[in-house]
Every structure is written in C-alpha cells, then in structure tokens.
Image (cartoon, rainbow, N blue to C red; front, side, top):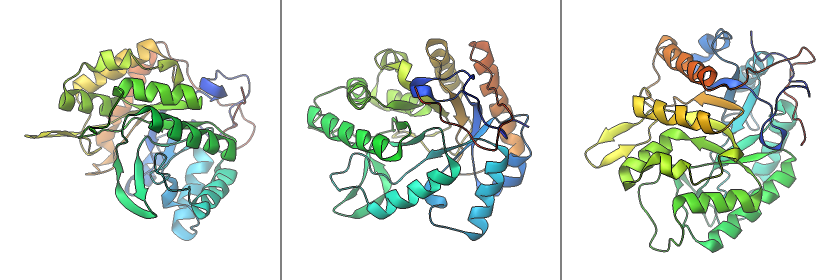
Amino acid sequence: MRGTDAISQADPTGFQGCPVLGVGLGLRRPLLEETLAAGELIDWLEFTPENFMGRGGQALRMLERAKAQFPLVSHGVSLSIGSLDPFNPAYLQDLGELFDWINPPWFSDHLCFSSIDGHYFNDLLPLPRTKETVSHVAGRLQFLQDHFQRPVLIENISQYLNSPDDELSDAEFISRILEQADCGLLLDVNNVYVNSRNHGFDPLSFLGNIPLERVVQIHVAGHHEFPEGLVDTHGAPVIDPVWDVLHWVLQHCNPCGVMLERDTYLPEFEELVPELQRIRQIWQETGQPEPSHSAVSGEVLYVAS
C-alpha cells in the first residue's frame, strides 16, 4: 500500500523541496472505506482542513485512519487570501495545530476572497486583477508561508465575471503574484478549460504564459455545461479536452502530484477508478517520477530547499 511511510530526503523533490507524491484523490466521507482500500490506485489524499479543525469524534478518527495509510495534503477553502480583512487568529491557530499533527508537505487555498468586514460567503469570489492587488496578495502569502513554515500554494479559480478595474490579464496576474510571493501554484486544469470556454481564449496559450516551474500540485475535475456557459462543479466525469490539457501540462512541467477532485454527485467508487487509472497513465507517459516512500515513520517529511 502506497503512502504509509515517510518520504526520505533522497527522494525527488519539486518546487521548494516539496516531495513527489504521485496520484491523489480527495478524502470524502461517503467513499472513505473504498478509498482506504485503494492503495494500488492512490498514492496520497487531499483533505479539507475546515472539516477537521478543532474537531474530535468521528471526524478525527476518519483523519487518523487516512493519516495511517496515506500522505495527506491540506487544501483549504476559508483563508480568504485576497480579502482586506485581517486573517482570523482563531482560524490560524486551529489550522496550525492541525498542521502540527498531520505535517503536510505543503498547504493550499484559492486565489480569491471570501470575506468582507468579517462576514464570510460560501463562495470563492474573484479579485480585481490590478498591481495593487498583486502586492496585497503577495504580502499575505508571504505571511502565511512564514507563519506555518511550509510551502503555500495558490489555486487558480474558475471565474464568471471580469472586474472593470482589471489592469492585467489573468495569466499576468497569477504570474506576478507567484513571483512576488515566491510561492507555488496549485494548477486546476479544469478551471483553465472552463475559463477558456467562457471567456474565449486558448487554454494552452494561457498555460504558456504562466511559470509552470512553480506548479506543485494539479487538480483535474469535471464540470457541467449550461446554455450560459460552463460551470466548475466537481460533479461530473472529466472530459477529453481537459485530459488533453493535463497531458500538455505534464509534458511541460514536473509537479509533485496530480489529484482527481469529485465533490458533488459522488458516484460509486468504481466509477472513479478509470479516471484514477488515466491520471497514472498520463503521469507515466509524460515521464514523471514514481513516488518513493521509505520506511521511517507514518508521516510525510517536508524537505527544505
């Protein structure tokens, strides 16, 4: 079974010393038993920290079981990285305590804002693409990386409206933040495809204009198509054009892991198996390294660069 042991310092590493993990899946309660039994398909798991912070009981036992069998990576939804609000101290404390226990090799959240004046929205709202926003977000990312002493990644979001204040293209906006903050990218290839269809641009041209050497993790997911456009739902099978984008990306960079996202309309686990197999097939076809887990302990070690 993959992922039950530590990653040694001799293993291949990516941006900022992040260990190569391989093929991952999101940790979802309805699929827990099948997920934990799928070590031949899955190398690591991504969890949503808000589901476990400051909690015990069944939630804690679920995470303990996953931690015992797989490397775990944190992907949050509530940091509100682009907000003007100060970071919530209680949230940072709970997140830090969770990281102290799990020791994820990196953590991520979305390039967006989700709070105004202390009021939180159940959505990932796009930021105005301005030079001022770049400096603001980069400073907050540097704070987070220093505070938690581990690499932070930002994820490109699907967005359905552009701001009249935009000064920069989406590719330039993301690139400037990554460079100024010196952080990593969680590249969601489905979001790139959804945005390309909704806003009328070439997804490969977009990808060619961002620093792919900073890609640490990749999300691949499905979406739904409506008369008004595409909506990123994480609730449908991955379509061929998105697989093509993933293949292109893996030909042009060396991330530490690719994971399948499925958050809504969860199918039986067996329906996810062909997609997990396809990720591994593309991973191998593009010459990505196999993850190597040495028997030291039950944790993933962050290898400092």
